[in-house]
Image 1 (cartoon, one colour):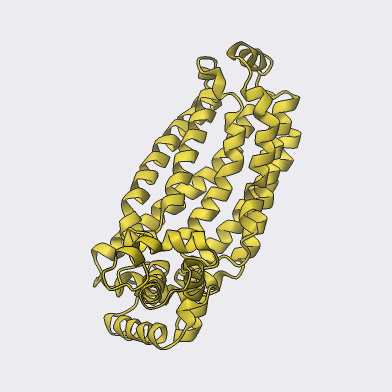
Image 2 (tube, rainbow, N blue to C red; image 1 turned 135 degrees about the vertical axis):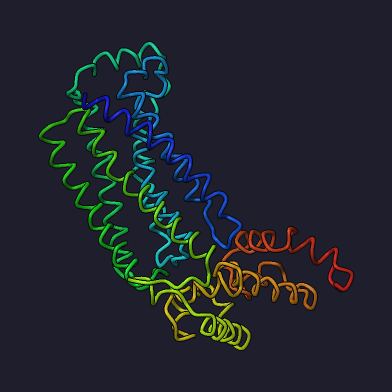
Length: 364
C-alpha cells in the first residue's frame, strides 16, 4: 500500500512540475527572468517520472532510464538555486560557486557513463538484483551520494542566503525563505541518518519527495502572490504584507530617484554593480528597488541596467574608433562575449553590425 501511495505522489508531482514550468515560461515577458526555473521544473518532472517508473517496476519496459534518477537528483538543487538567483535578481558574490554546485553531477556522470552505455539486457539484470524492498549495495551508495552532495550544496547556499537582506522580498517572506533553507538542510541530514539505518526503496522515495514538495509548494505560493498583486495593484494588503507593497507616491519618488542616480553617476557602468549596491545608493531596501524596477520601469533590475549600458555603448560605437572589447569594458561588461550577448539581447544585432549599418557612423 505504501508503494502505491508513493507512486501516486510521484505521478502527481510530475504533472505539477510540468504545470509550474509552463507558468514560469509565461512569466518570462513580465519583467521576470525565469528560464532557469523553467529548466529546473522540467528536469524535476523527468526526475519524478524516473522515480515513478522505478517504484512501479515499469522501468523494465524502458531499462535505459535505470539510474538516471540518481543523476537528475544531483542536478535539481543547483538548478533551483540558479533559478532563484536569476528570478529574484540576487547578485553573485562568488561566481566560482556555480561550477562547484554542479561538480557532484559531473562526478556522478563520469561514474555512470559505462553503465549508461550498456545494453538493455544488462540493465534488466541490474534491476533483477534490486527487486526487493531493501536496496543493494551500489544503489545504497548512489542514494547516499545524492543525499550527501545535495546537503553540501544546500549548506553552501544557506551561507549565501544567510545575508537574507540582500534578497528582494518583503521582510516576513525573507525570514520564511531562510527558515525553509534550514529545514531543507535538516531534512537531508535526517535522510542520511535514516537511510544508513534503513536503506529501502520507500525511504528513498520519501526523502526524494521532501525537497521536491517544498519547492513545488513554495513556487505555487509565490506565483499566487505575484499574480494577485499584478491583477489588483490598488488592492489594500493586510497582515504581514501590509508594509511590503509600495504606495504609488513612494513608487514614483523612488523611480525618479533611481533615474537620477543612474543618469548622474557612472555606477551603472561598474561591472560589480548589484541590486544591493543600488539600494544603498538610493536609500531603499532591495525589495523596494525590485518593485520599482518592475512596476515603474516595467523591467527587471538587470534589464534596466542593460538598457543604460547599451545606450552608452551605441554612443561609443558611433563617436569613437575604439575596439568592441574596449567599449564593452567601458560600459560595465567583463568580457567581449558578455557584451555581445547583452548587445544582441537589447538591439537584435551585434556591435559590429550596428556600427557598420548605422548611416551616421564614421567607423565602418
